[in-house]
View 1 (cartoon, rainbow, N blue to C red):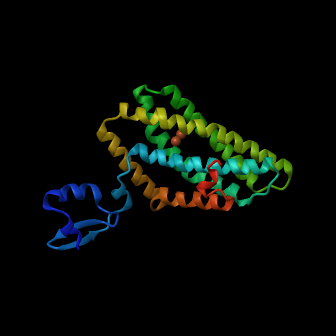
View 2: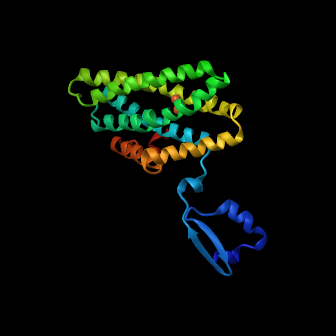
View 3: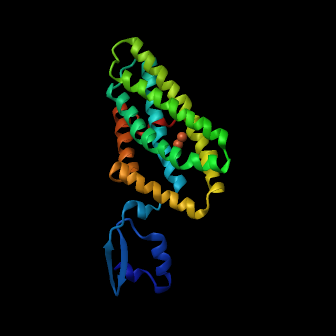
Length: 235
Ligand SMILES: [Fe+2]
Ligand SMILES: [Fe+2]
């Protein structure tokens, strides 16, 4: 039976509004159902401004977890694939520092400063972005010279410093800064901001940067043997 036969006239509008599959727009023509236009994934997903920023934090969190695993192995004097340090730091540099944080610095922080809201928080968050970039510089430099026990110990210290700052940093943005955005911009501006972010994302990465970097962070986890989520479940 074709899809059109399953849907009554009265329920078609509701059906179209709630359950159009990712493949594209469906036209009902008599008994036939025709997929006529494949929309871009972002048009389908309609990701809001805060959801966009928060799921980018999810990628940051997954790198923090990878860093934790590298720290654990250094402290336990276990081996780890040395390229995982550079892979993790490159995700941070390209996706978090040069993209996600730039969005915050160019489009969120100035709006809060102008509105006179969360100004102290924004000052700390901005300073932490700069500090994070300095730590990432050091992590990238050390990724090339992991020869001695001392090299590994210094790397562990930088990874710990990075994780110690970014876990509270992203949690504070998720629970204080991003919710407060609704109070300083109109609904229209909030929606426009999300669309602008999507445009920047496509220009920056030549496609859906989030999808590209979810794959990269999953590959990093697999290399470190921490991809299987069930391994984190306590007995
Ligand atoms: Fe931030
Ligand atoms: Fe952030």
